[in-house]
Image (cartoon, rainbow, N blue to C red; front, side):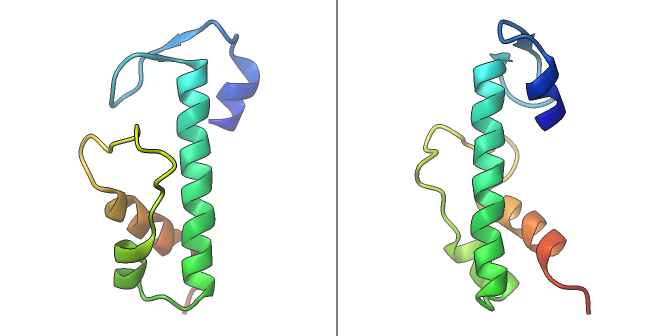
Length: 88
């Protein structure tokens, strides 16, 4: 997403794999959402929350317009959690 945001003209229309057609501002907004979600999940991991507790407790209320089409926010939290937790 960072690459696309830096290389594609601002007036470009985008057809995502999921969701409605959007523009670069919509892509930036979704990128911001994912970046902020990663930050919140990092806090949960570093704070010692279990995977299940992170899924229940991590919220991003400042993005009420982003509603996952095929999954829930909790599922997105679990994906980030699995990627961020230290390997055992």
